[in-house]
Amino acid sequence: MNDSGFPRHFDGRRFYNPDVPQARGFLDVFRWKLTSRPDPSPGFILDVEQSIPPPRVQGGELRITLVNHSTVLIQQRASNILTDPIWAERASPLSWIGPKRRRKPGVRLEDLPHIHAVLISHNHYDHLDLLTLRRLVARGGARFIVPRGVAQLLRSKSIEPTHELDWGESLSLSDHTVHCVPALHFSSRRIYDRNKTLWCGYVIEYPEQLVYFAGDTAFGSHFAQIREKSPHLAVLPIGAYAPRWFMSAVHMNPEEAIRAHGILAAKNSIAIHHGTFQLADDGIDVPKRQLVASPPHQSFLVLQNGQFASFP
Image (cartoon, rainbow, N blue to C red):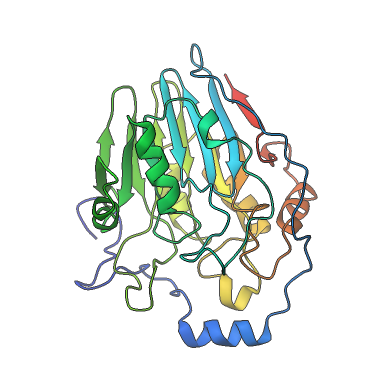
């Protein structure tokens, strides 16, 4: 155990997920790609009605807007927080190859309100898009909060101010506190940097509510630990889960997301990590359909890109 109370997750060279199976290696990636049978999905889906969020919300209201994929705008009082922002056409280091966007963002980047903080859960291209982050820097005023080891990349691209957090660490801002919490995942942007930086989720503590943003994570015992913080709202990933032999160590399927929702005992959850990029063999809208068909979908909301939900 470390000082945070969470299991130790760094061996002196690389980060890892304590006491659980690790993410599959590169040979398994080749095996998956050679045997992959992805569900068919449309090349592009024209069903997004883009919205314009308000500059701020009033009173104790909590407003969550799904932009796309794992990008959500969290608004409470005078605070506007953006998670894992991506407005790029591909979740890739290259403009001509890699997972391509299947739906528009639900909010144009230029229509965002002033952003006070940007939370990055890990360094994968669908969660840390440098072109998007540079555009946010150009707008001014945002702080960038990242897991341990990720700040070096952002600072090398003049994306600042940047704050690093380890599991169990916190950062207090003007009217809220951001707590870094465990996730079961991995990190990599190149062949030789695997797990050199950390991955995480975040609990955002407001005076009236606590919001848990899970980032990318497999199902695990960390949800019971996070429940102790009593989140009112959970933002949970549901997609990129097939095939299970390959993805179960890093991504939840809808059934597991529902189990996590129950363990967390949050009043409501919102689904992310679906509907914009097809990153695995499950079809672009299969996770959404499976979640909607499963109880208790009334308290586990599935928003379209651009839709929002408000909570008193």
